[in-house]
Length: 406
Image (cartoon, rainbow, N blue to C red; front, side, top):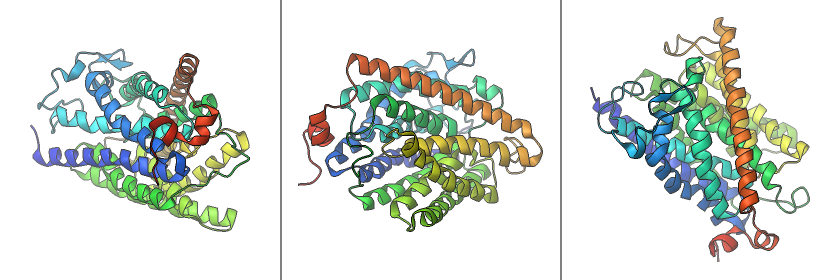
């Protein structure tokens, strides 16, 4: 039976998740140099079109269609054939399947957009489109099926991911690391200062992402129920704790708190609470957010130690946040909070932490290897990065013949 309240809730949640992609564009756009702001915005915005089309044609069927050996969905729902107003009890029994499809579409859209922060200011637009499309088909769709699809093999092993710590954040973080290594650093990396050109824009993007995250995590309950309430509260507490801890650590480490640090800490907390949001209580959510603030702060520092140019800290925030949140779920999960979840280490079930660690290793390795190979192939065929003169001029002029500011 279709429930009008649940349906309305998920439609609103889908709109909130869609808002996150323009929010991400603004968040990233403020952090790049003035000459690259439109190119950076465009890389996120175009995903709304490219990935939505891919999702309707093939992606939804691959991710959620009838199972093939636990690995991927078959193509019986190609072009949304048979996907209509009847609920699918395998996923959400009280909302039309078409509504579930469009809600999940918004997750598919933002995930490759997250990767763009790793190669900001230096990738050609056409190869970027090819990579994003192939990555969605070869990485996002299968991993989504493994964990959320009916019959998915990691789901069958007991791996839990409430709203995308593995499916969204770890896949994009692993791909971001591969991209930073293959594309190489920006010219002048380590010698020049790449100061953000508009931090107020980044803070606005942070606010839009935080707002949208309530649909991202709360909506993943797939009904207007108590689990949605648990996830909503955990989302806010994780985000605020991440921001607070990052600012405190930065203040002690560098002598001054920064607005960029506050924004980064909030996103780190929100990303890290995502896999656990519907399975942990408020106190655990705060603890996870605090862990995110300190761990992701020092995780971002690693790029300077190891020498890779992850321009906008996708690896240190989203990749590490996805890992940390998935493992933290193995520690803090409580069936007293969500009977449909699991009991974690603190509830006397250390085996679940091992299950979560297995999920991290499998998803992280798969996403990194496939992304690395894809990038190498595309680079060999077309060339990934802009030339020296175009990089000096900036993506706005070289790729789009536009300027953000006159």
